[in-house]
Amino acid sequence: MRLVRKYFMSGGKSEKGFVLVAAILATMILMALGFYVLTTTTQDIRISTRLVAERKAFSAAECGLHVLCLTFDPGMAALSNQSCDATNDPNNKYDIAAPARNSTLPSILTVGSDITGGKRWVSQVYNTTITGKDTSYNSSVPVAVGVMFGPVPDDPSYR
Image (cartoon, rainbow, N blue to C red):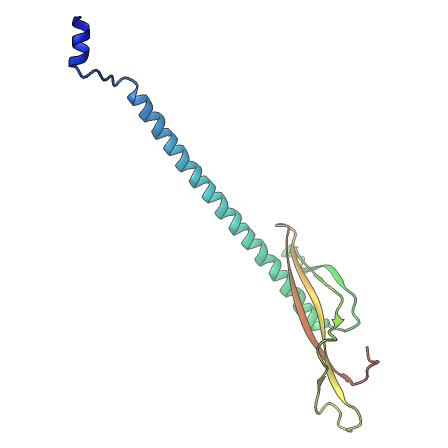
């Protein structure tokens, strides 16, 4: 009876095991926080890697655009797997699709191209796609390009 009285007088609450529960709860909170930080950091690294890859691929497409502007010919064949700078960055490459005349746009009259006055001269618009690729990141960026070519004779049979 004395033991029962002592139990009721002391409040009857045992605090044994509370420290264990608090430690487990704190450990779970710290693990959740660590998992959140790890996930956020991993996503940031993935995003920055993708941005670098897209910028490098766009740089390769820009290199292809410069080559297209310098060497454009309406009858040119498609170029594929061309290197931008094989010495410094061999992973940057570009493809240029064969140009096709845009028949939906009218020919643009080029005034003053013929000093004899016998022919009409026009400029024509050709469409192509340049795809920049970076093989180290396995990324690619397509860029649609319209190129004006001329002056050429205003003759429907011309090219």
